[in-house]
Image 1: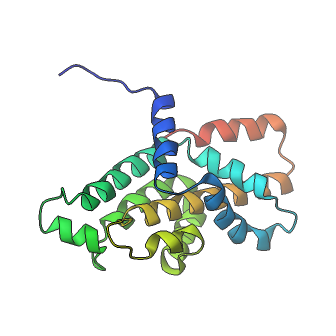
Image 2: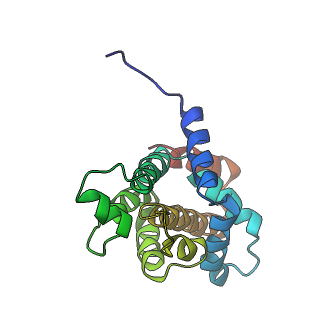
Length: 185
C-alpha cells in the first residue's frame, strides 16, 4: 500500500464541514465557551470565543476525534455496525465510555483546566451539547455530544490561559510563540 498523506488543510475542512453537516456551528460552540468564561472576564466578547473555537479546530487531535466519532454515529444511524456495538452506540448505552474516551483524549492538549471543564460539560450538557444529547428517532450523536464538549472545554481553557497572558503583559512575540506551539498535535 502506498504511503498516503492527507494535507492538514483538507482534514481541517473536512472536520468543520462534518460539524456543520451534523448541525453544529462554531458559534454554537462559542456560546458555550462564553458561558463558561464570562464569570472570569466580564468584558469577554463572543468574537473572542469564536476565535478560540476556530483555533482549537486547527488541532489534529480534535479534527481526528470529530471525523472518527461522527463517522461512527453515522454508521450507527445506517445500522452498519456489528452487534452488539450497533445497539450500544445507537442507544448511547450508559456504561459505554469509548465516546468520552475519544473526546477526553482530544481535550488533553489543553491542560487540566480543559480536562475538568470537559467533565463539567459531560455532566451538565449545556447549549448545543444538551440538544445533541436528546434522543431522537433515527439520529445518533453518541460521539458528537462529547466531542463538542471537548472542543468547548479546550476553547475555554485556551481563553483562560490567554487571560493569564494578558495579566502578565506578555509581548506580542511571546503570545505568537505560544499560539504556534499550541497547534502541535
